[in-house]
Every structure is written in structure tokens, then in C-alpha cells.
Image 1: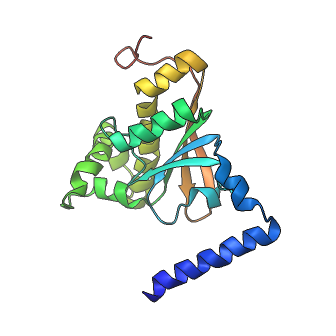
Image 2: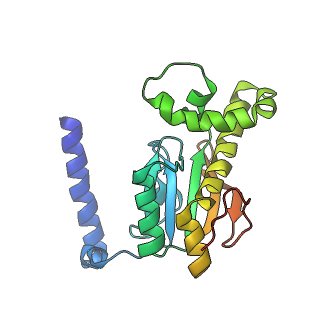
Length: 208
């Protein structure tokens, strides 16, 4: 319980520090949000999107899950994506993974993790598609290579959604970005960018 009380006390101290600098800070923040980015990140507690990008509240709309997956049957994710693209009109969607990701490690193992097996199966499919390349690497390199390949695959998954393709057709947005965060250096690395209207394989392309 002391840990919970500490969080509440820290909140009061933080709120006080904000209003001492700008007394209308929270009133201004409460009016509305107008973010430029949807961030699809990992749930890992070491990757706080606002802090690592030095962003303020209101700048990034966020969805996080284990290993930053874009799953076409995940209604939670699709609802966030739809709201960000169709209501908030974000010009950029960022998928950000991180090296040494526990979800990716789980996908590379044969350990039975119960319910989570069903989630990391999505990463196992990416591993299977690149198995020969990944299996040539050392254990640490294997994890980080699959982290990068997983991010790239999730950006492709974004482009294959009807939500993104419809927005591309009607508004020429958003740009899709794939990044990876290095826990050892605190830096972000760009892996892939897909511009609005990019050519998709006919198996995934929808007509509007």
C-alpha cells in the first residue's frame, strides 16, 4: 500500500509543479486533444513513448500491447486505429519495438506460456518466414533481428487494413513508420516508412 500512496503523492507533486510554471496548464489540456501521431508500442515499462521522444501530453495517441503487434482480429487495436485515423486525423502512425523484447524472446522459445502462446504466435509466423536467416545468428542477435523483422511486419499489417487504405484513398494520409528503441543507448532507429498510396500486393489491396 505504501507504493500506491507514493504514486498518489508523486502525482500531487507533479501537478503542483506544472501549475507553478503555468497556472492554466490543466485547463488548457482538458479542452481537447490534437495529436500528430498514433504510437503502437510494446507494453514494456522501460519504453515510455512520451519520455523517449521528449513529447508533451496531448501530442501522441497511444496503443500498447505485448511486442507491439498489429493484429487484424484485435478489436481493441482496430478501435484505436480507427479513432486516431478517422476522428483525430493523425498524419503519422508509428510502430515502435525495442531490442531484447520479452515477447519476441517468447516467440523464439518452445516454452509453454499459457494464454500468451496465442498472442506470440503472430511473432512465430514472422520467425518462420525468416527462419533460415535468423537461425544463422547468435542468441542475442537472433532476438534483436526478429525484433526488427517483427516491426517491419506490423507496419505492413497496418497498410493492409481497410482503415489505412481508405484514409490513403480519401485523404493521402497517414504515413506509416517502423522504429526500434535501443534500451542500452536510449535512441530510436528508423527501420521502414510507407508513404500514403504506396503500392500493395494485389492479395491485400482494396478498391474504394
